[in-house]
Length: 405
Ligand SMILES: C[S@@+](CC[C@H](N)C(=O)[O-])C[C@H]1O[C@@H](n2cnc3c(N)ncnc32)[C@H](O)[C@@H]1O
Ligand code: SF4
Image (tube, rainbow, N blue to C red; front, side):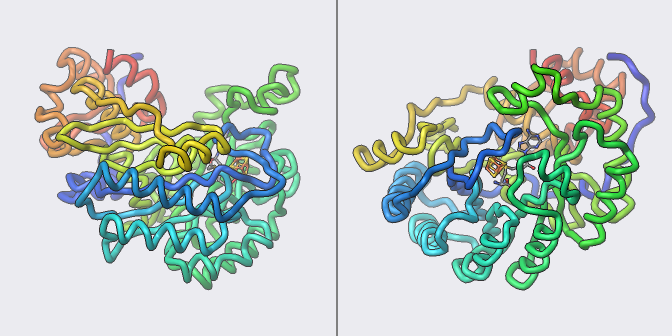
C-alpha cells in the first residue's frame, strides 16, 4: 500500500463520534429472533424457516436468558435495546413488550433509551408496527433492500418496491426514528441505475440509511450460483467507484457516512450500534447472540448456542444458552476495539484508549506501523484520537491486518 493522499478534514459525523460523549459508549441489550418467512439467497445470518413456533416457550426463554445476562452485569443502565434477526417483525408484540419490561426491571432503562426493531416491509408485518410502538419500540429499521422489483425478485425478497414504500409511510405514523437498508453493487447494476435508486430512496426523507454492498457469503444459495458462474459481482475497482459515488451522493443530501455502511443526519446515528463500535458492553440474548460483559473487573466475550431448538432446550434446562464465556486479555481488547472503532468516520477517541487499555494510541500500537500508515494517508492520529481516512476505510481489512500484527 503506498498512495499519497491529502490530509482529509473530519466530516461532521466525525465530530459526533469524537465528542466528549464518545467515552461513554453506553450499555446495550441485543435480542436475536432467529425466524424468517423464507430464506433469502444471499443471507448467512442465523435465520431459519419454521412451520410453527411455540410463542409462549420462546417468550419465557428470552426472559430467562435476560435474567442470566443481568446477573453478570448488575447495576448497569441500559441505553439501547435492539431486536435483530432473523425477522423480529414476526415476533408477537406481547413478547417484545415483555422483553422491554423485563430489561427495565432487571437493569434500569435510561429514560432516553433507543429501542430498535428490524422489520421486513411486507404488508402483513407493517400491520404490526403500531403494536410494537405501544410495546416501547421507538426506532424501526426496515429491510427495503432495493427499490426495483426485478432486483427484489433476484434477492428473493417477499415484498415489492411499492410495498416497501407503503411500509415506510406507515412506519412514520408509529415511529419518530426510522432507518432503512439497501443492498447495492448487485450483478449488472450500473452506476447511473444505482444513483437513480438512491435518489428515490433519499426522496423519502430518511434520517438514517444503511447501504451494504452485496457480498457472497459462505453456504448461501448465492455462493452456489456464483460458483456456477450465474452470479458475477462488480470487480473491486467498480465496487470502489460505486462506494465513493454513494458516499458523495449521501453527503450532498445531508447524510454523511458515520460508519463504513451507515449514513445519518446529525444526531440520528444508531446509538445501539455506536455502543459496539465504541467498544462498550452489551448483553447478547437469544440463539447465536454475542455479548461483551464486564464482571469481576474483566471484560468477557459471551456467545450463545446457535441452533434455535437446542438453544431453547438448554435455556429451559439450565437457565441460559451460553457457551463458556472467554475473558479478553489486553491484546484481544486492543484488537477488538481498533477493529470496531476504525469503522467509524470519527475513529477512536484517545479517552477510549485510556478507558479500555490504560494507554494512549501511540502506546497501544506499534509506532513504526502507525507512522507508516499515517505517512501513506490511511490513518490520522492526533491528541483527539485515531482515525482511518476515507482511503483507509476502503481497505480496512488490509489496514487492520498490518496494524494489529
Ligand atoms: C439481519 S439482516 C436482515 C434483517 C431483516 N430480516 C431483513 O431482511 O430486512 C440485516 C441487513 O444485512 C444486509 N445483508 C444481509 N446479508 C447481506 C449480504 N450478503 N450482502 C449485503 N448485505 C447483506 C441486508 O441489507 C439486511 O437488511
Ligand atoms: S435477509 Fe432477513 S429475511 Fe432474509 S433470510 Fe436474512 S434475516 Fe431472514
